Amino acid sequence: MALAAAPAPASVTFTDCVLRADTSPSARATPGLGGNTSMNLTGTATFRNDSDQPLVIKSALIHVKDGYDKPLFDLGPYNIPTIPPKQIRSVSMSYYYPGAVSVFRFSSDLVVTSAGGPDTTLSLTPQSQAAPGKSTGSNKVPGY
Image (tube, rainbow, N blue to C red):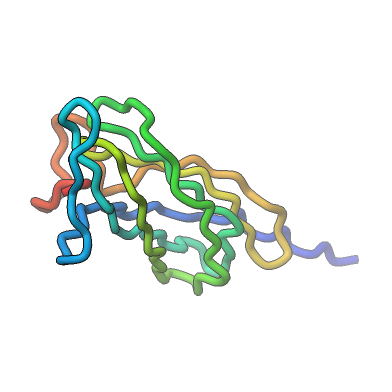
């Protein structure tokens, strides 16, 4: 009697996440209380399927924090129907932010499933968001 091989666990990398102030003519910063400004933020969150089989991100909740890791707001949850093996997919994000913070840090909680496998819950930080004192290998600063 042959046993069926157990499906490999879902493997995902949160590769990048960026929010920027929308600078289109229709999006203007407005004065807020205490001299703060409000702004329309737009950006993307990018995920890579590191496994050898297609997977589905059933839920991606993006946590947005200030540069000191103080929670500001959450974006999502987002659903990414299918990510082929070794491929990346991005989701577009937008948010009206009533504050003046311009440097953001990110983390995410994902519910991922692959063919025949159970749901897997992952908490990830973007690779592009290097730990203090470590280089990201590029000059892109998350949140700018």
